[in-house]
Length: 327
Length: 306
Image (cartoon, rainbow over all chains, first blue to last red; front, top):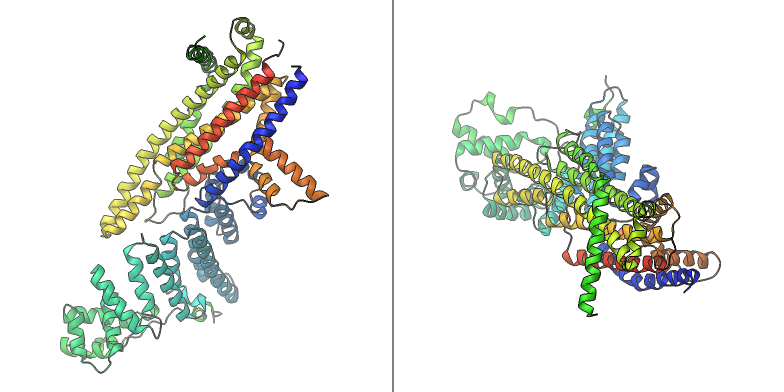
């Protein structure tokens, strides 16, 4: 066989073998995608953002390495308080490593907490700019977490983080309708519980959010009893909710008996109900709390001038208070 | 001759040539790069790189970072080593006139090619194994440290057993797992394909530089093979641009290997499990290319005049 013929046979063999392996490689590619082992294709926007690094990424198996580098870069943007750059960098990072919870969690945290706090306290900016920046940052953080959940539907922790953000007393005003935010927070926590493998506090925090949705008191009371039976841990919030939701169920019942049924002692009852009364920022329901406190103060002989009911209540987080122009 | 004896005789010749190629490459002091790898690994582990971490996740991200740096370095080293070592072997044997001595003996040319390639692959395998031992060791130590820290936090906060177990499994998933070893093996498989392909190119190439450049180019374009294949299957058949586009896409799909398949290492770095079945399929693909490229190289090399 001449050398020319040999090359012709070689070319033919390459093509035939290519045709043989093509269906196998295609099927394996689909298997890998189904198993979540193949990262999604990079968007053009992402490729543009990372520029020359793209060639390194294309060289295979280096996407997570580039994400690690970009994470370092994001940290320096964070220290310089360049929030738009932080957001852009995290958008790129999660395109490169969409299955890493840490990046979704951290990217959202930077926006919802760090950027939002910056706008809350940066007195050099005009009030309106601060208010807009604060609200946009929190909403951006929420969007980012929701994207993270869509990319990692089996991850309960990201859902817990969303539940936490939506019920955070310092952020909730940014979401507009507070009741809807608590409802969404409850849904997020319960979806984490539904996945399984969630932390114990997910169900408890779901209850705390549900208790703050007007009209859900009966459901919340049933859930509170269930959570208490399952987990024990009589935290002040749990005891306070059992009291106030129990009172809401039947306002005509004896407060005295209700206190006895919920709290281990009168002193604990006074401390818990006093705390619940003062926690206006957390927006918990306070049905029958004033009645309970009055009864307990009389029993425990608390001087009238030291009554919890006479103390000035802190206002819930209202953006207008924070961002009003300085007089 | 008895076929079994014949086969053993081939294997013995291939073994001798592979051992010689391996020794030849080791004498070129290629293992020096392991020192660089160790520096990278130690750097990623001990330098306190700026990270955003709350107390609940302190240290966990560093485990991902160690894997990411290590597997990234392994990928680069193995690809460079595979291409350069393979591209170097044939021309060096010609230059040293070793090739003439070998081919003057009753050594089938396919044994010579397979032996040389296996020598290179042995070198890549040993290098990866050494890097793997370093990575696994450091990762194990660091995982134990992170685990101890986090367990102390959980105990101080009186976390329930369910949460402690969850935290523990989260941390261990980022540590040295069987999937991580699978990822290292898939790095080796990718190196096997690229080395086999470089061998084919070097049989008709005129210089080491040509082989090296073309191999890197193919390696680069091979990562887009899956896109070309998708373009071929999703594009409507027709005339004009569509026709030519499909034709080019098909040609790329048929000629180049799909290197993207081996990017499973990214998923493993992110803490995913690499199923044995998938690794088995990747191994089959690696073997397919190895066998095919050796036979294809022999086709060109069999009657080549020196």
